[in-house]
Image: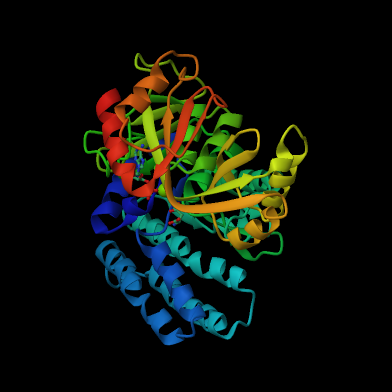
Length: 445
Ligand code: ADP
Ligand code: ASP
Ligand code: MG
C-alpha cells in the first residue's frame, strides 16, 4: 500500500491512512509512504538557498514543515508516553543543519548532498506514520528503505540494482510480515552500494512500492492518492474527468510517461514483469474501486481512454542536406543524446530533418553545440505534449481525423502516431494545452 504526499498531509489524512491500513490488516500489508505534501519541494528549495550561500535562511525555511510533523505527532501520541518521533526529529534537525552547511561550503559533491537532504521528507514521514499507527494499536515498524533498496550512483535519478534489492527485501521484510508486523517504509529513497543516500526521481515512491511488491510477489499493489484512480484527463484541468475502471499496463505506462502524474512511469514495469495487479485508489473515498491496471484490457467503444499532457517541452529541429539519401545520420544524432544522458520523448523525421522533443533541458547547450556539427539546429521552447491513449487506437479508422478536427483552430507543431498501438501524440504551444484538453475531453467523453 503506497500513500502519496497528499495522503499524509495533516492530522485528518493520517487518520484516514490508519483506517485504510487497519481494514486490510488480514492481507498482511506493507506500507510505503511519501513525504508529507510540500516537504520534498521545501527541502529542494532549502538546498538551493544554501547553495546560494544563505545557510541560515535555508535552515529556517524548514521550520514550518518540522512543525507540521510535530502537530501530527502531538495529536496521536499521548503526552507523557515515549515519543520516538520527537527523538527522530531532533536528530534530523541536527543532520539537516550539518548537510545544509556543507552545501554552503561545498564540502561534498552537491548531487550527493542534495539527495541526502531531500531524503529527510520520507525518513520523517515513515517514522511519523509508524509511530501514529503504533499509538493506534497497529503492530507497525518503521524500516529504513536505504537498507533495502540498492541503486547505482546516479544521484537524483538512481536505478535500483534489482537482484540485490530483491534479496534484501525478501530477507528483511519477509520475516517481519510473517511475524505479523506491518513494515512502514519511506518511498523514493534508497542507497548505493557504498551506503550513500540516493533518490529514484520525483514521484519515485510509486516505484519503490512496485519494487517491493515485485520482490515479495504481492497479491496487489495499491497506489493511494487524492483522486479516484486514473481519470480520463487531469481533473485539475477538466472537472468532468471520470475514473477509468480498467487500464492495460501498456496504456497506463503511456499515460504515466506523458504526464498523468497520478502514476510514476516506472511503477508499471516491476508490476508487469511479475503479473501483479495495480490498483489506484482514493484515500478520500476508500470504498470506491478506483482503477485496476492489468496485463490486458478490452477496447472501449470510442477507443480513447484518456488524454495525458506534459508541459515545459522544448522542440529541437536538426536539418542537414547531407542527410539526403544517406545513412548514419540518425545514429549520429542519437549518440549525442546518449552521451549527455538526455531522454527524447517524441520524434518525427523527414528526408532531410529530424524534429524531437525534450523534457529535460539541463544539457541543452552542450547538445546543441554537438548537433551543430551535423546540421542546422533550431531550439523552440514553450510547448506541451498531448498524448491520447487507448487500446486499439492505431487500428481504428477515422480517430485521428476526429482528434484533429475537434481542435482545427490550433497549430500542431509535431505529430507521432503508429509506433505504439495505443497512443496518438502531438505537440502544441504550451498556453493552448488546457484549451485543447478541454476540447478533446468534450469530444470523446
Ligand atoms: P501523490 O502525492 O499521491 O503521489 P500526485 O500528485 O503524484 O499524488 O498524483 C495525483 C495527481 O495527479 C492528481 O491530484 C491529479 O491532479 C494528477 N493527474 C494528472 N493526470 C491525471 C489523470 N489522468 N488521472 C488522475 N489524476 C491525474
Ligand atoms: N516525495 C517525492 C516527491 O515529491 C517522492 C514521491 O512523492 O513519490 O517527488
Ligand atoms: Mg506521485
